[in-house]
Image 1 (cartoon, rainbow, N blue to C red):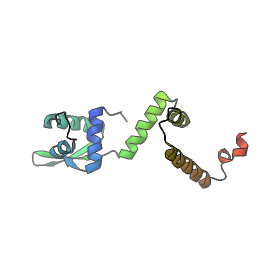
Image 2: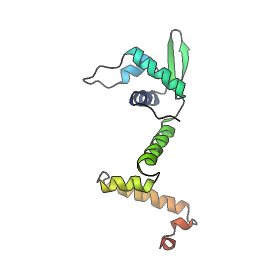
Image 3: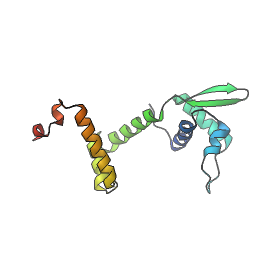
Image 4: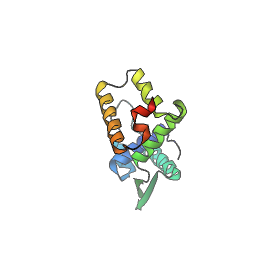
Length: 137
């Protein structure tokens, strides 16, 4: 899978939200800001690139195409996080999490949530020696 550009990712975020959309519907979803919304031809070009990369498919409706994501947001998110982990944290989830903890970018409630998830995972796999704190010593 290829990493998406910023423009491609923006359009995919909109498509994941809408499920199916025409170019005009995608443009309408861009946030109102100081910047001008993208032009129709720009969005259509990015969608063509996304289709070549395998991220979207289209159905013809007269002169228009309705686009549908072929890659789920969850699947791409997992790929993107693994890519960042590999490039910056030697593929280590613990290095990634400790980076944010050390930079004080994680609040105490999020840490509690993470600890809760870890405890749930340990209870799901009680016979796994990695979960036994005594064997880690």
